[in-house]
Amino acid sequence: MTRRPVYERDPRVDHYINALPPWQRELCGRLRDLIHAADPEIAETIKRTVQPYFVLEGNVCALLAAKDHVNLFLYDRAAVPDPEGIITGGHNNKAARMISFFEGDTINAPALTTMLRQIIANNRARRSRKPKSSQRAIRPG
Image 1 (cartoon, one colour):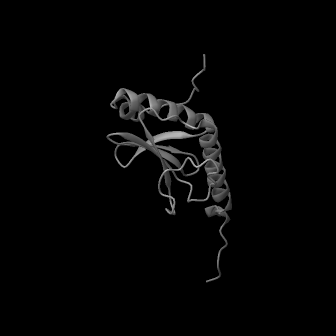
Image 2: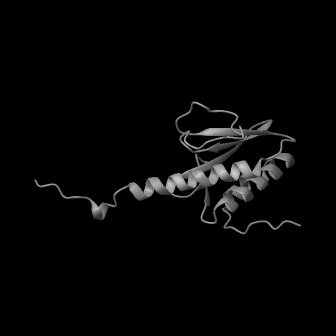
Image 3: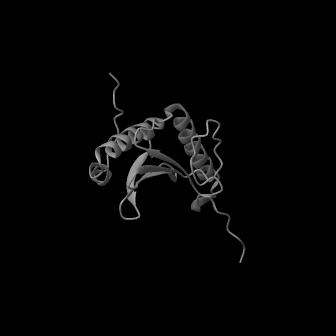
């Protein structure tokens, strides 16, 4: 028996997932657990009125259910390698790429976890390079 990761759930994300057909609900639940397992500091929220986003030092990924599939958008700026070829769309997109899951598809959890962790590491690195407002140099007038 596998244990589900413990994390703070946003009730709006619960509402989004619970309104889906059973196969999409189950898939989104597994993706949600996997996303949170990638880093315990990931937070979930709703953006664009209804879309579940997972954030840590910036956007990490988002879920979007369509009629016959579920998209997982990875906000990686096309910088994270995809050696196992799990990305299904947005290959030339500068902001995000996506993985589309159809009924019966399996999740390549190891490959996805590796990509999520790299996105988080990139987000953290970008944040650490930004000057804090109290550290800005004051230019002579």
